[in-house]
Length: 419
Ligand code: UD1
Image 1 (cartoon, rainbow, N blue to C red):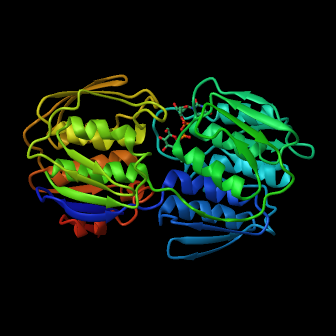
Image 2 (cartoon, helix red, strand yellow):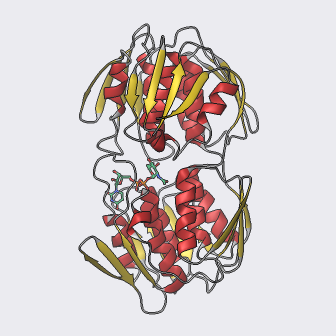
Image 3 (cartoon, rainbow, N blue to C red):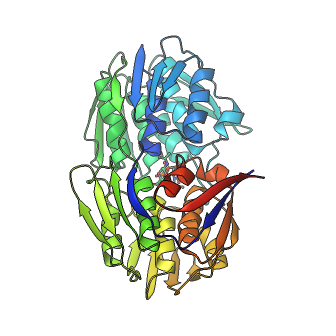
C-alpha cells in the first residue's frame, strides 16, 4: 500500500500545468467504443481510472495505444457486450458502458458499478432512461442484462433531478437510435459539452449540450476523430486550495477559465487574489485566509461537489466560521473525521458542516476514504505543522496524476512510501 508523506508548512510557488479532465476522459473513452475506426484522444490524464477504462475497452475487443498523453483507440472489431464484474467494481463510470454497448451492438451485460462511496449511489435513473429508449432490462442477482431489438428507439427522457452520469448514459445510448431523443433536465457540466462535441465530430447530431435540454437525432454510424480532452477543473481547484493554505503564489496553465468560474468566488472571499488570462490563472494567497461564508454544492454552474473537500481544508485554517452545505451526495463529509485529526474544528449534521477556522493544524496520520477526501488531506497536510502520512493513495491516484512530483516541483516536500 502506498502512503504519501508530507512535510507541512512550506509555501507553494511556481507554475503547474493542469492535466486533462478525468470526468471527461472516462465518458470519452467509453464513447470511442461506438465509433468505427480510429479515435485519437489528446490530453488524456494518466490515472488509474483511465487504465481501468482501457482494460474494459480491451475486453470488448478494442485495440489501444498510448503515446504520452495521446490515446489511439480502434473499435472496428469490438463487438463484446459483457463487462466482467471485476472491472465494473473498479469505478462508478463503468456504468456508462451500458449505453455505449447498446449503441454498438444492441446488448449490454454488466453488474453494479463500484467507485467512491459517497452514500447510496443507485443507477436507477440510468436504467430508467435506457428503458425509455426501448431497451429491455433484466436485473437478477446483481446482474443487469440489457437488450434491444435492432437499435434503441428515440424518446423523451425526463430526469427527475440533474445527474451527470445518467445524462451521459442516455446520450451514449441514443446517439445511434431510430429517431429523435430529448433529454429534459439534462446535466450541463462542461464534461457533458465535451462528450457531445466529441460525438458530433464523429458524425453524431447532438444539440443543446450545456443547457437543460439536449436533443439527439440518431445517426446510422459514427466514425473516429481526433479530440482534445478539456482541462480538469477539479484538479485546478485542488492545487489552488494547496496554494491558498500555504500562503503561496502559483500560476496554473492549460486551464479553461470559463469552467473554473464556479469556484473563484470562494477563493476571492478567502482573501486570495485570482487573475485570469486566456488559458491560465494566477493565484496569490494572503498570510491568513478569511472565512468562506457559504459553500453550497450544486449542479454546474453551481459550486462542484468534487471541490467541496479541498475547500474545506482551506476553511479549516481560515479566520472565522465557514458553512458548507452538500446537496449532491448524502455521504460526502467523510473527510471531516480526518480533518479533525489534523486539529480542525468542524461540526456537521447531515448535509451541513460548520467549520470554525483554527490558527494551525498539526501533522498526523490519516487514511483517505475516497478520492476528494484524500485531496483535502493532502491540502491540510501541506499547511500543517509537522509531518503527515496519508494512506489510501489508491483512491488519490484515481484522480490526480503525479501529485507528489507536482507538489514537489512547487516547493513542497512529499514522498510516496510503499508499505
Ligand atoms: C459525476 C462525477 C463525479 C461528480 C458527480 C456530481 C464522473 C465520472 N463522476 O458522478 O465526480 O461528483 O458527477 O457532479 O463524471 N443518482 C441517483 N440515481 C442514478 C444516478 C444518480 O439517485 O441513477 C443520484 C446520485 O446518488 C447523486 C446525484 O444523483 O446523489 C447526482 O449524481 P450524478 O450526477 O449522477 O453523479 P455521477 O455521474 O455518478
